[in-house]
Length: 379
Image (tube, rainbow, N blue to C red; front, side, top):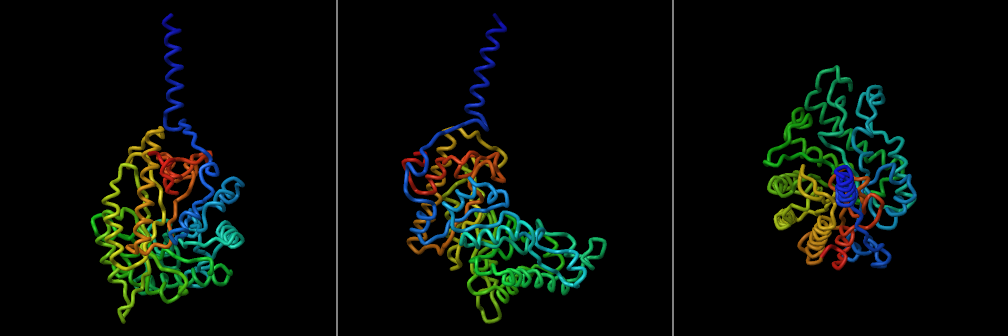
């Protein structure tokens, strides 16, 4: 008898955990076509914005994900394949005596795919402390050599930035790009400059030189962005930086500030919008460049229960709605918003269930929240 009771309890717990636990919740919402004839492209276009997603080679190789991307988005950012680790050629740099940018393999495949499907692109990214090969900072482009001096590192920075735009032009893809993240994540939350090899070798003015070179080599059609996360804590530092990025005649070298917006449902949107408004006062363009909204808070993910997913849907509704309202009123200059993915199963933060669609590409309250369809957004 005790064994029978134990088995019944165990079965109940298994059903409960698979139905309400971290990976088993299946909140079935109506398919998008049953709710609206519009796509994300339609909704964002009504406010003068492109809507984008990050992509990987895998995403465009699968028929179901490719179909969704092409239906919903008109802008893409490579998740990884344009970062320095992927586009700098060590052997050619050593042979030619200068830093060489060369697109290969999956990077070329994505560029051609974007061109074939007439998708606009954000470039991401050139000057960054992460996913950048250590060898570019050493003599002989070899980590066994000593670090180069300031003058040499400035030449290499110029090579990287010039090489990026020249390679895209040579290959016939430059006209796909409307924005480029020139520098990524240079500031700490306390308002100090992040210590990196860029800053240690060149000095704190490496930011100015990055935008100076980008301004020289980028066509006028490409907006030059600084991109970072945790805008709530960094807004004052970003404003000060933006004001310093001017040439000798006082002309701005920077066009926009990218806000990554890796947020959580526990975050305070009032504080977030205060940071957005503060940054808007610079007069620069603003873009949310990497949106995802995780359930719960940092290092404390919540289960994707119906209650928690409704909270997420409402968060997306208020976040995107607040941006639309500001853009429509002319309070911010925002021409694009990019989601950092679309499916929970493909997200870099999948443990937080942060995306618009679940792992099976079913719509979530989050999708309808982003589309401003309140009755399906978890209210």
